[in-house]
Image 1 (cartoon, one colour):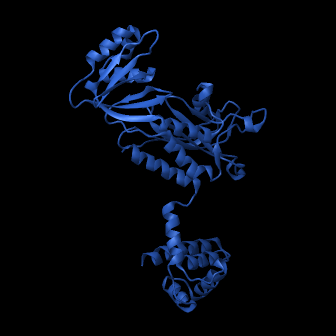
Image 2 (spheres, helix red, strand yellow; image 1 turned 60 degrees about the vertical axis):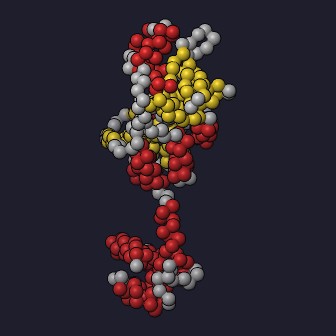
Image 3 (cartoon, helix red, strand yellow; image 1 turned 180 degrees about the horizontal axis):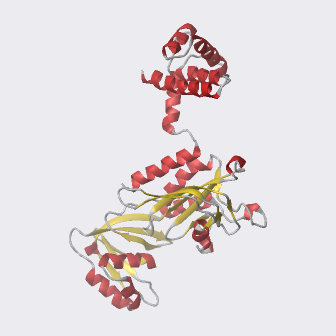
Length: 372
């Protein structure tokens, strides 16, 4: 798996990322609500079917005034026809090795004949077909090679919702130069028949200590092979009314091709979302739950003695155990309870260096006590 990473720094004026992706999309592809975009992506996925076919079983039928061009497919002994979109027709032409410039110049019956003649028909030549049921008819959304690996927009949305939506992030909107009700301000969300784009920003007031910078995350994907799956994280100063991003800094772009490595690429995307959210992962939460159930020592005296062995002074051990009782309010001497006692003790120390040392020591106690 290869995740292509690009880092950009010091961009001085603005970046047209959101403006290009959102405002150049047709109005029906622009969204005010992340939930609505997610719902639409999920609904389209439920209407879709994925099939692996042998190319010898695929025949293109020419279009007429009454009918668009169609693809005839054999699925076992059953033959069915599905409408071709402009994009899926071009994908079929590429598989057949017919230049797109030629396809656009030929008459419908001629280009269908050319594609059918040139389509590779060997026993081992297969393709993946993505069909969508559209009110009784079927439509070919995508015609891709055997190595293609699809990533659904709904799965991307689910990760964004899980890690960012509940952690102070929201779909990006103008932070200046927008006149009118803020609730009606455009959101940097779009989804067309070919691709999706979502730009989230950390909500709330930016920190003055950092020059008024916001943190942003933009994500793009295509379910049909029109573009790579990618995301970019960055700091930015403001977004104007037409979604131009001003003062972008520290931009890192990651992209991965829709091949078998897409799964590992998606895992890296998830890890980046977790880091941005600051949320506790399922694995971390499970570890904490276990630490709250594992006994550190059967009584106060032996808890203090065990902390001495971990390198805490007698005074620090005594205070930490005392605070573990008051912090949790239950008097338990679990690994998690005693660890909290150490961090509570660290917070009472006057010097920052000492506090950091004992906070680190709390982490060491937690890890080593759970290890054995």
